Image (cartoon, rainbow, N blue to C red; front, top):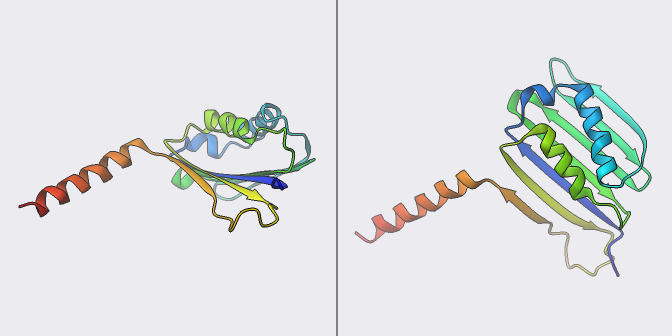
Length: 149
C-alpha cells in the first residue's frame, strides 16, 4: 500500500537575515510556493516574535506548510505535509530557497501512513554543504597520512 502522505522538512542555514525577519516577504513567498507546488491554502496564521523571528503556518486542503525563522542565527525551519499525491512540495522548497538564499540546506522526506510497508520511519535525508565535505575529507587524509608514519 502506498503511503497516505509525504512529510518534507528542510533546515536552511546561512539565510539572508533581512528576509527572515520580513513578514510581508514571507507571506508573499509562501503564497508563491504553494501555487508552484499546486497546493491549495485554506487559511494562514503569522506571528512576529520580539525582538525578531517569524512563524507562518498555512492550513492546506491536504496538509500544512509551516515556516519558522531565526534571524539571529540565519536559520529557517520549513515543514510541509501533504496527502495529495499530485502536489509537488519540492517545488515549494525551490521557491522558498530562492527567497531566503541559504548557504546550506538539509532536506528530509518521511512517508506517513505506510501501514507497515516500511519497517520503520527512517527518513531519507539530503544535505547540501560542499565546503564542509572538503574539510571532512581533508581531515581523513591527514589522519591516514599520519598513521602511515
